[in-house]
Length: 251
Image 1 (cartoon, rainbow, N blue to C red):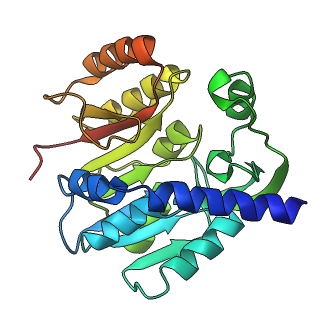
Image 2 (image 1 turned 180 degrees about the vertical axis):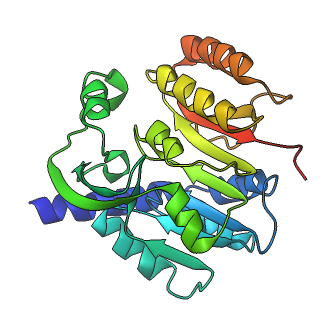
């Protein structure tokens, strides 16, 4: 049964993230604000590979970090003819080493390294029916180490189910732009990430709701403005999305 559940979960994720009309176009249009052909991008938490696919279509060099063995195999197969995309079977966090990855076989995109995040989501109505029913030990690295190996990226996309703040703790250099996911019930985690980024450099912020891949604000915001705006949006709609941070005006 476990093998069937894993296969069904992978197939469902691939269908959701690659086959919905218009999603790739919106992703590419959004990321074109941050990157150009030849730029280096880190995709931290590659999952089904839809973000890496968008970056590759824009001509970027992409390093994908994906700790789930099943997803890592799928991504290597998906990008085997794309030499500008390299898939590394590793997680990112504050310190290198080994850690337990808590897997949800039927919904693998919500697998996490953080037991507290898993426990909080188990009480969240938005995650009703999700079960974390398996665990595997995985290698963990830091963004600083990935930069040492591949060079400094133009953009870092982070989608790591509760490890966003830990990933940023493992980054000691400023990068021009990055994104990380937010959840309606996890705005304290957004605050931690914003605090970390503003300690690294003069970042300004924007955000997109759901899978719109469109900036929700006409203007880039400072940290307190972002948090206040997100709080009001979440109170009205309880919708997840992504926060974007940049150091300087978009090219």
